[in-house]
Length: 309
View 1 (spheres, rainbow, N blue to C red):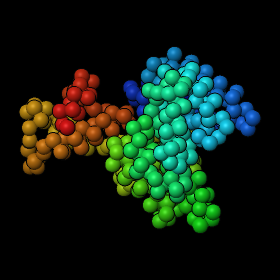
View 2: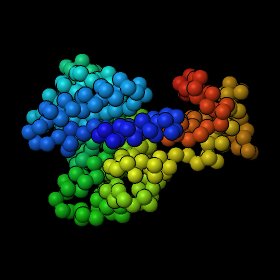
View 3: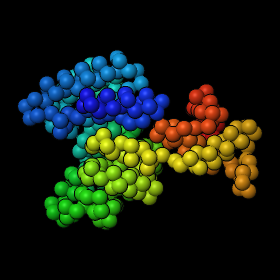
View 4: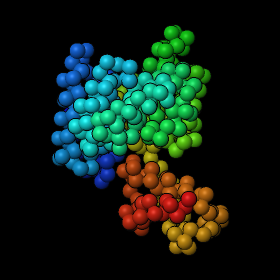
């Protein structure tokens, strides 16, 4: 955990912005019987890191809502370090009722402001994912690949967890598409699952490209530091896309967002939204922006977006 937080600090300095979140893990990170001690550890790590770096982005994955340590996790971690966290991640969410329970626990801990990121890890959860995505406290939904495959009791072969099978098996692909579609329907962030072949940079890059370009995912999990840069590169727009988007947005701003002609094509507020979102993605992935575009983003990141609504 400390190495991940240090890597975040190093890459923030390199890129000029925080390009990935660190999620401190209680579900799989805590030894059985040592849940309270581990919760105390992640709380102190979050507090000390945020005190040293105001721009740090730290989250905590707590135990599932039906685990005996769930309420204690939320009470201690969110209650003491809620102001230092970007969100709380809740694994194995099966229903809106699970989300409601997590929301109530945060409120009881005095951390109702924290958004929830939830993990969808079973066929039943996929069936209910549109209702889960509609919940106002849910900010992002992640796909738990390995638990999802295991939940099928052998009906999906183990290859379904690998780099090839997770992009070819129909049930796995259906789950990924349902999650992405539900998120986009309700304005939430779809986060793609891990790639376990963490020593294979080509595999992680290919997976991230497929997730972003074919399945509509805008974030992706890493399980090893070596995976972060390939994911960022795959999720980032190209230099040509950034230049095109910048030219269109700056030209649109100059005419108060009225329609324009650019390179022989008509653009209006519908396409302006697309290109503004591309610029935001470029910024979030640490890409260099043309100076006029960076100035616009710095001065009015939300006012410009509201103008496009």
